[in-house]
Length: 209
Image (cartoon, rainbow, N blue to C red; front, side, top):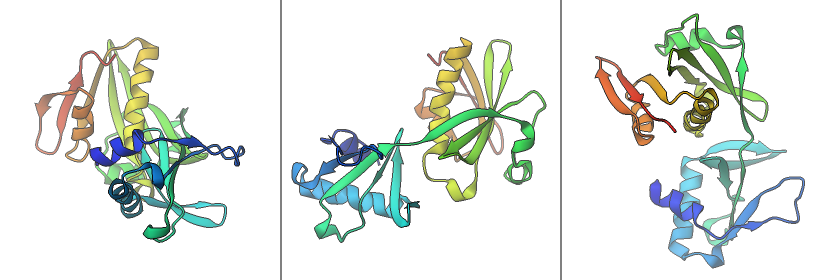
């Protein structure tokens, strides 16, 4: 995954001037090592998600704040890879707007003092997350991505957004309780293990910025 990510991030990208109403970039196969290009195309098609662009289905894969896709031609006729900025927006929502039942089935515990944020893609809410402001720290609570939208990078996007949220509040300490599925994403961002429980681990970052 890291190799694919680095190949795509470091590729030569060209702005698509012919489509100003849909800003995006493309990278040409002729500017790549051919084997690396094929690896990236196959990775996107195997690990991505299906989404419509008007009436046409494409397979997209999200890396950081951009989505990548190809036109779906046979591999030997695929000449480029496209990318565009994700239209992800995170905004505060009311507690009544979240699907608590789904979260509770996933083992989430809800607290009255939690501030909730919706994670939106093209105005569609794909999940939600909560934070608790407690003294001199932020506690991550109830990050939940709806099953049909998982694997698209929304969870990672929220973690990175939350860092900016902490800066706005001038709070450097963040604490979270992680499952086996989420802990690696926290550790990659500099969190350290504070306490281990049977089914989860408490992590903390003392200086997020």
